Image 1 (cartoon, rainbow, N blue to C red):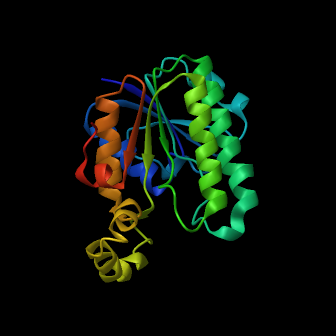
Image 2 (image 1 turned 60 degrees about the horizontal axis):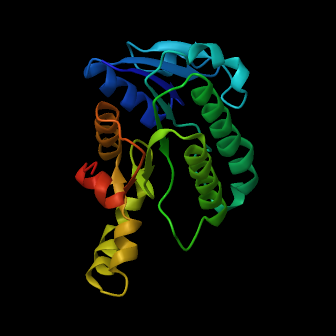
Length: 216
């Protein structure tokens, strides 16, 4: 059994992942902002704090085997570049600092597929976080999805015929594969498998590997 500390525990991926980890027998401690305690998965241990301020939850991280960081701007778009730095980057730096101080052995981060023709500010921030994770010296699993389908996030299904066409053409096949759509269960099961089998070094999981739930 692993002890997993998870930020963004009340998000749609955070709730699903927490529930799956608990089902697998792991202990989950989830960080949420005050007033959001009821939104996390049943069976999780609740910690209230500000994910942007490391000191508000630092004392709750020691003892964790894996730290999963899921905080970020909801529904990212090119007009939220400032928010990416104020929220995504700041929360990741706080998470890395706390996990490093607590000597957590495995750090899990949801980055983004790259390169891509759009969302450059978002990609830049996620790439900066990836570099900070490497610099901290963690054994880490970094997932690089593009768009994850889930509750309230189903509209890209209408693009599936377009993805099929791009995937059929040699000139666009690689990009269509790298920026393909994923289902929330693909993400959750792959992340849970990664926690069950932590890497030695940094492991990058792109869209094809997440879809196939293949860690190596």
